[in-house]
Length: 95
Image (cartoon, rainbow, N blue to C red; front, side, top):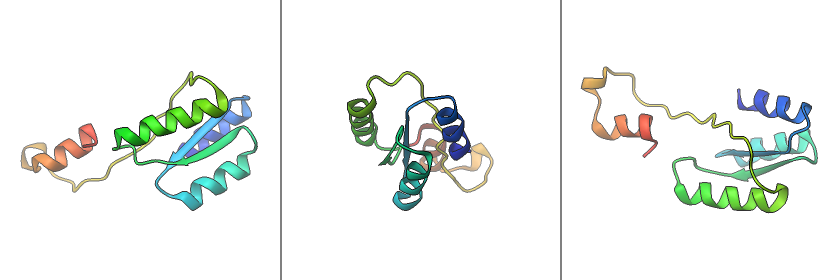
């Protein structure tokens, strides 16, 4: 889904900052999409990674005006009242 978002934004003329935990796939997609796309390795659960990505991205393209956060966190399937607190917080708050 993130790849489709990036493709559409590029087609509309946007400059795009891609991020992912998978360096090879992210770099390959950025290269395929062209000069208005950069890739940065990012763990969305890390506040420090968000700061770094924003600073580096704005250094290349200027202020960020749109954000598509397409990250997902998998957890064991369970009823909310049966989940461990750690799993609950990871899914809802990405902690």
